[in-house]
Structures are given as structure tokens and as C-alpha cells.
Image (cartoon, rainbow, N blue to C red; front, side):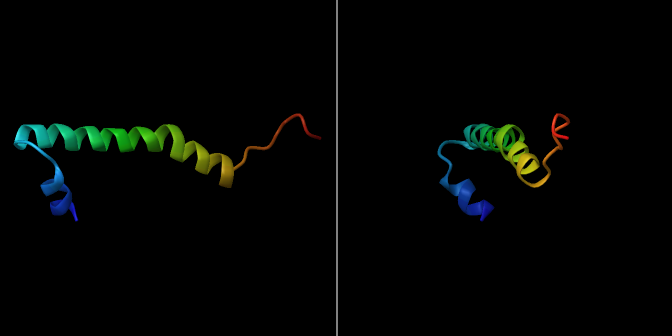
Length: 52
């Protein structure tokens, strides 16, 4: 699968590395700022201290 993705990237080696790095960083940022908070709120809710 990684070989197919690598062949799909355009340009010479340096450009492919830059695009691959940008894709990895983008995926990591999406997970950190959207994926993980959603999982924590959905499956591990924190108790509300105001409700008695």
C-alpha cells in the first residue's frame, strides 16, 4: 500500500519526501486536535462537579 501511495505522489524524490512529510504532519494534527478529543469526550466523559 505504501508503494502505491509513493508512486501516486508527483515530482522528484525531494518533492515526494516533502509531500509525504506534510501528509503525515497533517494527519497527526487532525488526530491530536479533533480525533483524540472526540474519543475522550465520547467514551471517557469527565463528571460534572456542579451536578449533585
